[in-house]
Amino acid sequence: MHEHSYVPALGFGWLTRFYDPLIAVTMREQVLKGRLIDAARIAPGHDVLDVGCGTGTLALLAKTRQPRARVVGLDGDPAVLAIARRKIERAGALVELREGLANAEPVFAPASFDRVLTSLVIHHLTSEQKREALAAIRRWLRPDGELHVLDFGPQEGAFASGVSRVIGWFDGAHRLRDNWDGRLPALMREAGFAHARESGRALTPLGSVSFYEAKGLAG
Ligand SMILES: C[S@@+](CC[C@H](N)C(=O)[O-])C[C@H]1O[C@@H](n2cnc3c(N)ncnc32)[C@H](O)[C@@H]1O
Image: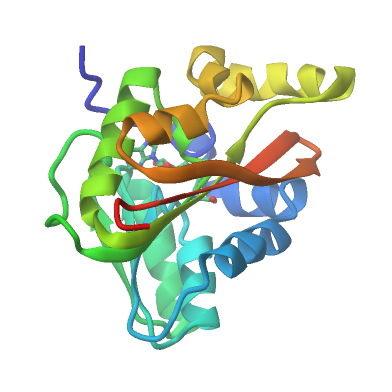
């Protein structure tokens, strides 16, 4: 069964307006998102897609770090995209925004992007949606392109598992299971990516997050 819907940024639509201040405090946002962008080595002329761009922080940071790249943000939630649009306008940046679901629609033509970034999105998807979204992302990537992911990964220690239960309440523990069990690299390989691996971890007050990377077929 395909679920053609999305979980809002904080689990409930009415919380979306509090997303930026909450995440800035709990996720060391600039540091972790900066690390994801560094790993992606975005070059001038690259086409870059941020899947589940939310309020646009990562897409804006990517554009600021590499102004000569084209940056596109995709999200299924029109309310969060309205916040992103205001932020991007205030920054005077040229970041394109598209409304659409990564797992349900052929949003972009095949081989449209050199880099796909995605932060704190995959744990919002069921296993089936993860497979569909990763397959779509692989199609959108050029053969020598790269996927760079920041999301919850395996949790360590009693503190982390306690916190994980809170995240599970907001975002749905059944959707987080693949993340907590370290299955994202296997799901990436299943979707046709090469060299899928966890490249690092960081501890946040909301639990351990992992950095993942994978290459398109020519990688
Ligand atoms: C927790 S927020 C993360 C936002 C941003 N990437 C960040 O790191 O702050 C998850 C975002 O993914 C979006 N989302 C969830 N499922 C999606 C899907 N299937 N396709 C596109 N966007 C989706 C939600 O609307 C939400 O904005």
